[in-house]
Amino acid sequence: MSQKTATAIAHPNIAFIKYWGNRHQALRIPANGSISMNLGALFTRTQVTFDESLAADQLSINEAPATGAAHHRVSDFLAWVRHISAIEEFARVESENNFPMGTGIASSASAFAALSLAASRAAGLGLDEKDLSRLARRGSGSACRSVPGGFAEWQVGTGDDNSYAYSIAAPEHWDLIDCVAIVDQDHKTTTSIEGHAIADTSPLQAMRIEQVPSYLARCREAILQRDFEAFAQITEHDCLIMHAVMMTSSPSLIYWLPPTLAIIRAVRDWRKSGIPACYTIDAGPNVHVISEESYLNKVKSLLEDIPGVHQVMISGPGGAAHLTD
Ligand code: PMV
Image 1 (spheres, protein in one colour):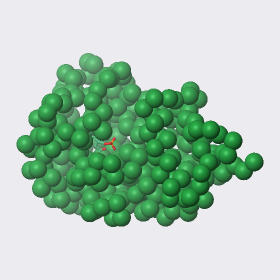
Image 2 (cartoon, helix red, strand yellow):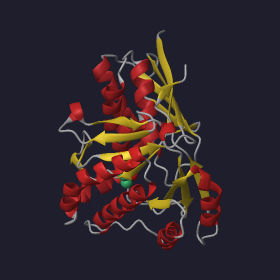
Image 3 (tube, helix red, strand yellow):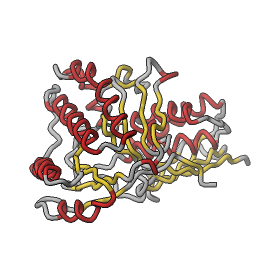
Image 4 (cartoon, helix red, strand yellow):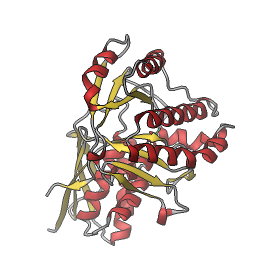
């Protein structure tokens, strides 16, 4: 009986210039490029075993069998891996996260980056970083940015061949920290898949897409120069413009809760008083407050004092997706 197995680890990432909307829905060719940082303290570890004795793909997440939409999505992804590697066996996928799901940290990015590496290796494919990032993109757009290490840019590209992410700076380049303020732990919301699909219904999306190349240039430069003030200005602006698109889509997507806005206002005051801190928010109400490592304790305790903040999770920059054996 033949078994082909591999285990991989990948980190989630937080985008400073956001991906919102697709030019090609199924291939996840994005409407715009994006820039992110991997979160080194958080990870997904995934083992994939192609096994000829299986009659269907099997998935477990944190040791519990997964069915329904999650299973479907992983099985569709594995069908593509089987197609490009010309193998036929079904796979057993065992995945675990060291961070709680439902905290607004997108587990799909680390999940599909780890799955891409483990599944492609188990299937006998030796993909380079670019092709691995292209593969991860098919599972979840933002997953392509969790393949390279540190600070990554996803070049929008024109199609499947050239839409992928690469590192623009190593994790050691800048000791930024992400303090994730959890304001809602049990959030039932519109998923990013549904959100991308209606982005074009906002009259603001076309204008945003036209502007993003200049945002990318400003953010990239600020990261390379470690210029916190320039970084903060473009990161917050990009977050607000994406949420303006979300709010003006049909149907309207309003992800914020009252504590979300309270944190936005507080962070603005902290920065005025000299603390390097800025905010960014994904498709949910929780706020990622980005600062520098020497301000970690200060920013964490300020956040914990804001009513409605349940928990603050901390991470610095993380490395690339990698095999564990
Ligand atoms: O990769 P997805 O489909 O989960 O989309 C991610 C969307 C945002 O988190 C809102 C922005 C981003 O670039 O990560």
